[in-house]
Amino acid sequence: MAQTVPASGSETIRSLIPARIDRLNWSPLHTRIVMALGTAWVLDGLEITVASSLGPVLAEQETLGLSSTQVGLIATIYLLGEVFGALFFGRLSDALGRRNLFIVTLAVYLTGNALTALTWGNSAAALVFLYLTRFIAGAGIGGEYAAINSAIDEMMPAKYRGRVDIGVNGTYWGGAIIGTLGTYILLNNVELNWAWRIGFLLGPIIGLAIWGLRRHLPESPRWLVMHGREAEAEENIARIEQAAEASGQTLAPVDESKAIDIRPTEPHGYLSLLRVLFRVYPARATLGATLMITQSFLYNAIFFTYTLVLTTFYGVDEKAAPLYMVAFAIGNLIGPLTIGRLFDTIGRRKMISGTYLLSGLLLAITAFLFDAGALNATTQTIAWSVIFFFASAGASSAYLTVSEIFPLEIRAQAIAVFFAIAQCFGAIGPVFYGALIGEGEDPGRLFLGFLIGAAVMAVGGIVEAVIGIDAEGKSLEEVATPLSAVTTRPRATG
Image 1 (cartoon, rainbow, N blue to C red):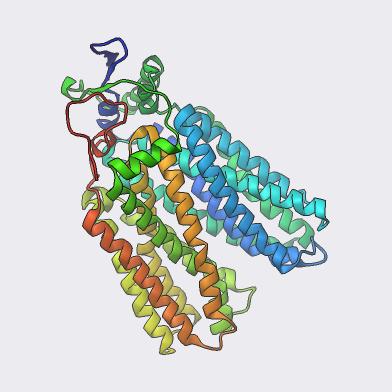
Image 2: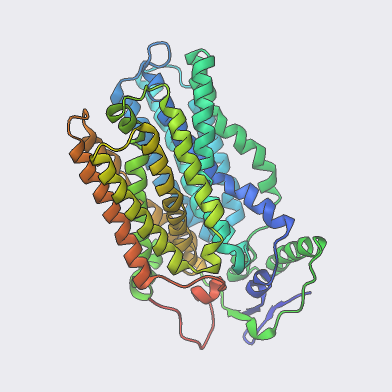
């Protein structure tokens, strides 16, 4: 059933592909898409946790004998790699396609991480090798964020897009759980010089397991048709529709009035992106930046100092700290998986602002309990788990927002830019909170820090309430008109 046909004018394509995608109900193919692509966040959560847990081990003489500064640089280099990868591969994803890039970025990650395990010492050459491999692994994961968020949004029916994106982003914490338990078991049962190497191979093992799934996924039909490749778009949408029909769905014809006219243009670069952001979508750019920065600041602040708080203020043994981290991660994982669907039913604006404001309020309450000495290690962990049950869904919705409120032609680049901005601001959190914690001599300073974190999240919630986009249940093309669309309707702005 060919429903992408030439419109008047030889360079214009009239397509029903967006409407055909949005009319679908859930099918096994959608499950495979989520399983194959959603592992990007599992891998990142695993990577951050493994590197954090193994950092002290790499300072031991029986492993690499690194200094504290050299260990700290491992995380910094990895985050720099993520920023570079997001920007570099985000540009390529918009120009060359989602499928090409989500295969390439996984290969880059697998290569970088596997090579990390081969680091042989702390000589200058060995350190260059170590940092280079961490940069490569980070670049692969950064590229995953841009390419995969785009692919998932473009291939999900509108009625499922919110819950799927939020749930997938939330699986970061599934990776954190795997990384925490994996390194805990390895460090307590395997010789250290082997344990850290195996730890860095946990991610590649998971990556290889889903490699085959990714290779058999279709390209985004939306991306294909927007780039003038209508024949390939038809082949890929046909695959998706056949999978739906094979699952028992009956697909009714799509009303011709839902067709969109496209005149494909040359790929857009970052200069084009900046023009679109500041001229066409200044309010949306402000919204995306605010949501990404506020959640990143709070998360990095709490996550990277979590163990320090437990050991410094509550006297938790360093070897037992990972078990508290598992409880914290479980709260973060359950939130997006259980309330994610409300972002599609109750709506984006209400749920995003609500989760930001509620998590900020709960953090403020916890700050007063902490200052009053009313908490211990267990109750502090329970409190944080409850707070981040909501904050995790809110943070995931920030990624959903920046991936759906900008036109398809620059979608991956927009995700990359806001991801990079968030990482840069988020990097302030651990340093700031680490200084507040100090040697634990003044709990009042951390109390003030918690209140600052609560205020930061409240800012995100207020901005969403005022200028948020009600994108629930709407086609991506309705939320943000493609730059290549030929239409007499006014382009969405703001």
